[in-house]
Length: 606
Image (cartoon, rainbow, N blue to C red; front, side):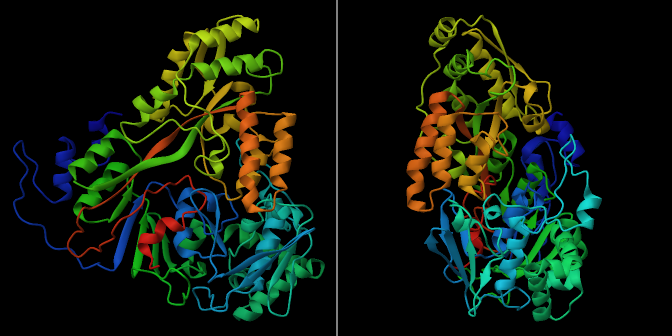
C-alpha cells in the first residue's frame, strides 16, 4: 500500500508528515508554510497521568500462559507485578529483598527455600502467603494435570472440552517439572522445593503469579480471602479429596486472567506491583497507583495508561499533539522522519537478535552428515553481515554493528562469539568443490518477507550466495507455522531470537537432540554434552563457562550464524505538553526481553 493510501485508510489528511503534524496540532493545511488560525484550547490537567503507546497488545496477567508471555503482556506485568526476582537485559537474575528471599539450602538434592517479606500485599490489601506459591507450583509443575493440550496442524488446541472437564493447568515449566512432590511449608510460612535433579534456572523457576484468594473466590465460590486461599491449599495438597475443586481451579487459572475476562471483571486483576489494573479495554490497559504497595519501587504517577490502539504514524501524531507522553512504534523510515519533524527526543537501539539457522533434519542440502556440513559452512561464508548492518539496519539505528553473540537468549555477547568477516565466495566455492558438491545448490530460505527489513536482508543474502554456486529462493511456506510444523519446506531460516524466562532451559530446548523447541532438527553429541553440563550447573557464577563451550561447538559445526539486532526506537517529547507529566529520560523499549520490570524505572521512584 502506498503512503498516500495508508494515510487515506487511516483517515489522515494527505500532504505528508508536515500535514500530519499540523493536523495533530489542530492547524489548517495549506500549500504555504504551516500556520494555525488559532491556538488550540488547553487540554485537561493530567500532570499525574502518563500515557504510553506501543504496538504490542495486552493478552493476559497470567505469566504461565502463552497469552501472558506476549510482549504486550510482559510490558504491563512489569509495572503491576512484583516478585522475588526479575531478569535484567543480560538474562541475569536480580533479587528483590523487600519482596522476599530465594535461598538454595542444598545442592544434593537441589533444595530451594522461599520467604515472603512481611509487608508484601496484593493490591486489594490481602497478604501474599505460601498459598500463592503453592498455587503456582501446582500450575507449573504439571504434577496434578490429568489432561494435556493437543494441537492441530495450525497449532491451535483441539481438545478444549477435555481440558475443561479434567485437571489441566496445561502450563508445565521446563524447570518445575522436576519438582513433583508438594512443596513443604514450615511454621513461619516459608516454602521449600526439592528438585529431583539439578536445574540451572532455579533462581527464576518459581515466583508469585496469580492470587490464590482470588482463585478461591472465582473458582470455588469462597468469599472470605483467607478461607478462599485455604481452600486452594487444601485442593493442591490433597488432590484426591478435592478433585472437583482442582478441575475448577485449573480451568479458572487458565482463562480468568486474560484480556477478555479482565475486560468484563477488572476487579479480579489483583496484583502485587506499584500499580494496579483499573480497566482493560480494546484500546489498552488503565493502571492506577496501588495504595497497598510497600515495595522497593513505589509509583511515581497517579495513573499510567498503556495504549495499543494506534498505528505507528498515529503514535507520532499523538506524541506531537501532547495526547501521549512515550511512544515505542515499529522502527521504519517514515516513523523516524515523522519523529524528526516532531522534534521528539528519540532513543534508538537493538531489539531481537536476527540469526540464520540451518535445517539439519530431512533431505535438504544442509541436512545430514555427509556433504551438508560443507554446504552450511559455504553458505555462512557468503553472508554479507556487514552489508546487512549498513544497508538494512544502520539507516534506522546508526550505531548498529554485526552481532557476534551466538547465544542471544542469555544476553548480549554471552556465551562465545562469531568473528565479523567479509563474505568470501571464492573460499565458499572451494569448500563445495572439495566436498564434491555439484553446483548450483538450491537453498530455500524461510523468512517473514512482509517485513521490508527482512525482505531486504534476504535479497542481499541471495545476491551474495550466487557467486559461490548457491541459489537461494524464498520458501513458499508460511513462516508463522513452517518453522516448527513444516521442517521439509525450508533449508535455512532467518529468525528473530528473543530472551526466555528460563535462560538455560531455553538453550536445552532449542539445541538439544530431543529439545521441545528444536525446530532445526539439530542433533550432535558434543552439543548435547555441553548442554547437559550447562543444565546441571546450579552455581550462577559458573554458567558463563558452560555457555562459552556450547557456543563454540555450535559455531564449529555451522549450526547458526548471528547477523544483527533488529532496530527499535522509543520517543518522548522534548518538552511536555501543557498539563502533561514530565516523564524524564525513558530508556529504549526492547520488547524481545522476557522481563520488562526495569524498563519502567521512569514510572517508579527508587
